[in-house]
Length: 239
Image: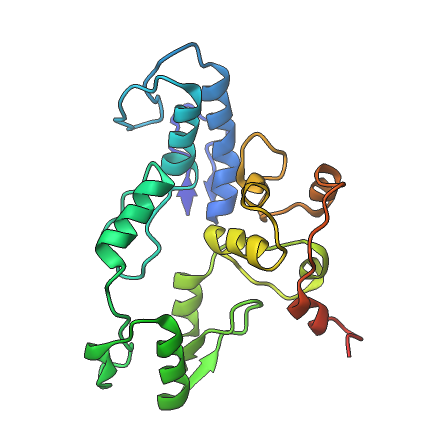
């Protein structure tokens, strides 16, 4: 359960998912930005940030620290604090995690201590050496140990769905926010700025899901994106 941190909040509700909480916290962010009257500190409860001289810097801080915390997604990372900028997160991953090897999760396996340089090699090892199953969520298909499906979904998936074209009629994917962005870019061939706009508080697309289909179609009426072939092939009558 996620609670709103603002003591004076009239809603004072608890939220089941990060997406629901973020949708509510947007209202507090927008109120802070609308009251901007020059350089100021962040008034978010318990925030000890320094002075923000520009409005866009405060907006970035609110988004990455308080609304949808920009945390390291590397499994096992000990850093819990969010990053203020994408560049800070990338530097952290490069300096702390880039050269780490990915270990086999089976403790009795030799590769539990040797590990693999690439996730692809770990997945191949898991398929060939251990009893495992594939994740049944759409757009995933990760090879996981039988009996660890629940922990895989908790660690590797989130609350977001793509509703573009065939994806909107397909099976649930439960993307994390970052995975949803990458899906839009790699599968639907969106440019990066467009792929990030559903998460931008100045657009009207921030819902419990990554995209509200009707709003998206209205806003991007003149744009055309590629469909998801995997979802097209899975629809009834595709074959």
